[in-house]
Image 1 (cartoon, rainbow, N blue to C red):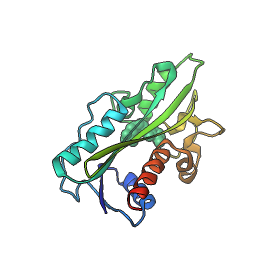
Image 2: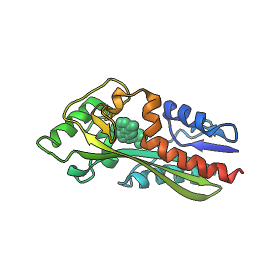
Image 3: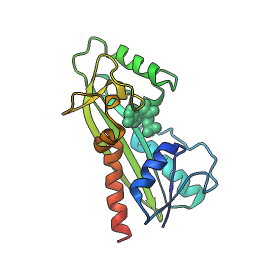
Image 4: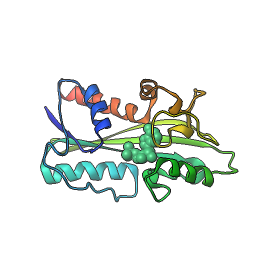
Length: 192
Ligand code: IMP
């Protein structure tokens, strides 16, 4: 069965196609002829995930899924949240981290979580799948792996940041893999 993953991120595409297996033929946006910028204007993570999937379904009529993720920090009322990718006004990860650490300076409550929402539209029927991982924001960067806020995020139950873990270890507990596992379990039921 054909399914389009509404992303232009080749790394995500590889990760998901490895997990999905042979029952699904994963199509990229360019495979279905979509070169449009997908809308991400809803103001929430689930909303943006839905917007992207609905855009592909409405304009291309292809069963598809989209994801959206972000970091929610309790002491900042859930910021950067949906603005995680460009929190500093740029898409530069180091500057986004700097902005976050500045906004949290002097704060003792460092609780935060990463959130991913996948929206699946299968033959016009929509489902959402959420994955989260809770942790703490450190006061300085540690580690060189990963991307985004990984060097300042220490997941609960661990004494290393995501950036100090191998990608296999991070993927074993990450918000994205948790949301993805839920979607894959659902898809497996659909194809028997
Ligand atoms: P996206 O929706 O998956 O593109 O994620 C949006 C933004 O959230 C990214 O640009 C990162 O700043 C942040 N983010 C999402 N997932 C992760 C992660 O696993 N590690 C670090 N930062 C992340």
